[in-house]
Length: 157
Image: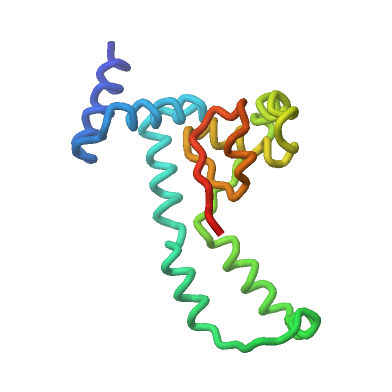
C-alpha cells in the first residue's frame, strides 16, 4: 500500500510538473522506465539530467560557426590535423545530443527483418520500432517494406 501511494504520488507529481501530459506519453515513459529496470522517477531524473548536460544542437552549431577555416583537400586536411584539433573534433562529436543504444536487445527483431533489409538497416528499424518513433530514410523501398512496424518518413533529396 505504501508503494502504491508513492507511485501514485510520483504520477501526480509528473502530471503537475508537466501539465496536460497525454496519457499515451505517460504510458510510453512508464514502459521505458520498466524496460530500464527503474522507477518512473529514476528514469525521468536520469533522462532529464542527460538532456540538461548535453549541449543543444544550437550550442554545437555555434561552436562550429566560431571556428575559422577554408577549403582544403582531404589529404591536406588529414596531414594538418594536429592531435589537439583531433581531440577537439572528437569532443564536439561526443557532445552532440545523440543517444546511443546497444544492439544486443535488437538482434531478435533484426533477424526477423532479414528477408527485406540488410543487417545494419534492420537494427535501425528494430530501434525505431522499440522506441515507437518514426524511421526517417531516403530509401523508398525501405519505407515500403511490408514487415516494418513503425511509421516511416521519406527524405526528399
